[in-house]
Amino acid sequence: MTDPTILPDLDHEHFLRRAFAVAERARQGGDHPFGCILVDATGKVVLEQGNGYTAEGGDMTAHAERLLATRASKRFPPAELAGCTMYTSAEPCAMCAGAVYWAGIGRVVYGQSEHDLKAMTGNHPENPTLDLPCRTVFDAGQRRVAVIGPLLEAEAAELQRSFWAEGKA
Image (cartoon, rainbow, N blue to C red):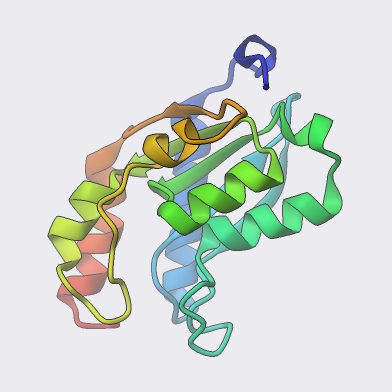
């Protein structure tokens, strides 16, 4: 179990806004507006990832958080990931929360809640959102993952609101 006291005290709003910028770049690149970054224990951004639905050929599992967790797991040892924080524009879905858990990332900070995202997008075929909090997924595990969020939810939601309202999906 990761001791949450070893996680660094970071400027959550600063890093979350960097994740929002990644989400906006994903959108500008023709993808769904989700993005995340991984920050190590020293406060350095070591990875960033936008949504890969379009970039990965319509892969419904190519969520930003899942892709980043996979890359992080291949690149960093578990002891290092335990001290890392994932900042993500939206709350990790059940699949992504599972990937974060299995990768060993110690903390997640998110913008928009899964509940709010589902209410906003409805039953969209490209985003059949689960209203299952990531805390519920993490709580089912044997290792603690610290969670902070929703944070800056209105800013995070605006990334999604304009995308889905424009019918870009």
